Image (cartoon, rainbow, N blue to C red):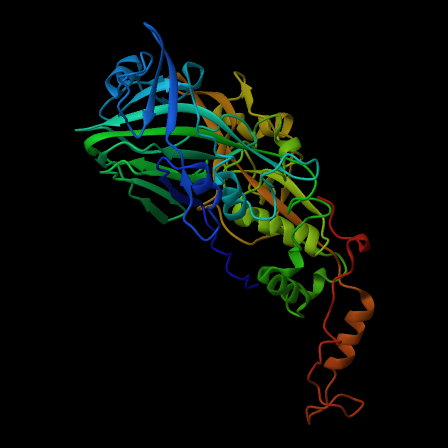
Length: 474
């Protein structure tokens, strides 16, 4: 079986605004969609030991306002920025050197919704799903302010890392670079071997820059060589409502996608499925390419509404466009076992969870009885009949089982699982099989028994039965 190449989709998007100079009311009203977007200066308020403070980006002469401070005051009130590692907050300036304020310590006049950023993210990163408006028929994309960070010369940086999701429905992050003069501080965002770079050097402090990316993207902030790189970070969440690409009645028609036509033609072709499966159907498997918290207790509820990129596209094509049954299942990594303990005739195949499991913990499971423990605790079936569309090389993994392994000393060990979509391929309809067999009976002159040319006009292709016609039950 040759499956069409998966589409390459955007994993990040970004843009910029010119700072709006002081204007009259009539000047503002005269702006049109044909002009580049602008934004007024941004005011930041924060709590300080001396009371409330504020400053403006880009900086201005604030000598007449007793509450206004300069950037040095803001930096003084910030704390060193840490990063998460093994469930702990770590301070290591060789890996990350920056200052930070938590969202509870400041507020700002910048609003991603009013600026049009949320609309742009919806169109590029989750097309056909979230709508940037509060109507009941729209999926809601929320940008929650998280932190303010300042990367200062000569060595402010953050080496390559992946953000820790703050909830199962978080799908990405938004970074807004405020207009303050600096050089360096390039941001690189990477996913599945591809890379996008954002250069925000801002000598004249005349622009606001922003970028949004999926939460499983690796990204890196290179060293700031002069000035201060000041950013606001937002966590992006998606909340399900009617009207999305993964709803029963999606606003985007999945049958219009080029991928739908390719897959539909492939499934209807004569050689897609072996003859022995004509009457039983089969199972296609697809490993999700983006990270989802599939060992969280809320994942069952959040899927499929938090799917990203071509994961959402694949789901929409199979479940909605082709009307096939799909299942979200955890698949355990391959576990090597001792042949002296487990017989050679043990069934081989993929260990597919009967549902999406939370992480399993045990102090009774040892290296010698891991598989026995799985049979009793991590409910699953072994499938040797799944045809996988892709492999696990780019599939994110999560810890599925944590146990004590005993040898010379006790130590903690674990096994991983991958999140997958299993698609039931129904049996082919008997009338189409019979028709195809009849058309296949050709004489030595290349003609069918009724004297017609043996080439098919499409009516004789084997067709899948509709979803209600059956298929494997996973």
